[in-house]
Length: 409
Length: 219
Image (cartoon, rainbow over all chains, first blue to last red; front, side, top):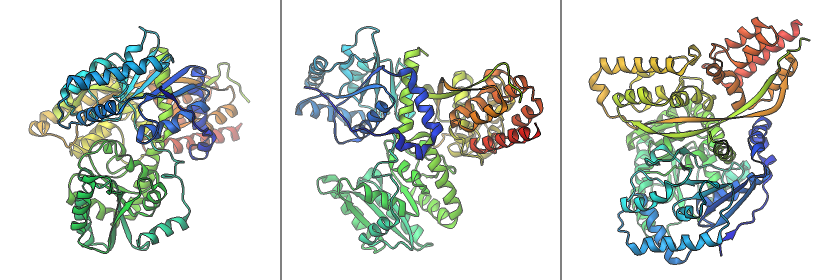
């Protein structure tokens, strides 16, 4: 059976202190014409992953605005999720030969879910490729269907995309996290940024004492400059490049480097990368390599808040929300101009972009030499996140989309 | 206190960004994009970006100038594009014409640079606008002040900046109503002279409120 999720209430007023009364009034004004109208969000997992994390917050907030919103999760067997995981990697550009059996499994599970999911809301939002074929349940012109794609489709495996495109082209619209991730489609495509929740454990304000305790726990000196990159141990995040950039900075500034990521114990490739990182670090006591438990949001929050400069030197990136997390905390960020990062870092306004190890090192040195500019970038970065990358802005974007669909704009 | 016959109705606005089908990886392609993109795209990258980046006051003018600076690395052209002031335009056609002239002249003067690949591509997008009324209207200067003070950034942007295109006049909703509704032409003119490029939306609003307070003290 498909599952409709019951979620805990999240009072919208909790966000008023951060956003102000006028922004709250605006959300209510946008929601007013949609009051009582039905919305159905559908994805393929209730826990784990960014989509579930966002829906866990977004759906209760929409309920606060008197929208009739439900979140349903499609079901599937191991064979279905094996196929959709392969599809996911293939759409990211990984080599993959899809067989007819893969397509048949995909279609069979979508068919089965069409019989159990209501799919009768005025606005149906389908998240990612797994439930894309549910569009077959749509009765001609009866309701609005939109497809939210959270993955980068810039270089997809052609047979997999051609298979999916037949379904996607029948939606009323598609939403992507960056223009770069989109495809040429016959339907309108909209920009929908991922979002952070300012009240989540990863982003909420922290007591100074807790930050101090976290630094002490990891033997980080709070009195010297701290450069931090938060990311899993993955070559695409270029942790070795970060160490090389740090070494250049270190010639001129007394600083420490923190590389913090999830544990590599259950990720064979991560364990290999971690070894490479340890080799590159060469027992430098000022390089702290931290394997955090899978979910250590408060520690990540504390490390970001304690940082002098936050780095995100990815070679390839999805949207890179860790950048927004750092900007929200008013931190100056030096990041690579890849994926969704240039949307968050407006060069020289909300942070600094770099294209190489040397460039990254130069921008960090510049910020350490000009703390007043670092402060200003952090302030502007915070404002940029407030305007564009908070969960409340995401809600506003959805309201605007539903109004556009309802009013036929 | 004077009361206007026609009230000022406060509204707010929200924008969806629609991804266009054009992108540019050289200045020459950028020029082609500027020539052929929709009016909604020119609006998005000039007028609307000023609203969504209202907190930047130093050196940020529009998306075109920012891309030319950060990704094409042409400071001189970026400066010329940044200098185009949207307050001088009451139509997108006129603004597009000047954008094309500036970029076209540059490409003609530096044909080799025009063909050089940029660091990142420029993606032409469009704004899809949705406006909704706020339950607030004013007939007197006091009510008007109160309404402005409690307006969201988007609402303030809509009345103060994007209104120029809607009115097809070199003014904004606030000044228009102050002059036409309350007969306060001098105050209207002062409000219209607040510099939206060197002020944030918050500091523009603070200046506007100060001007209204000064007027009210005179009464």
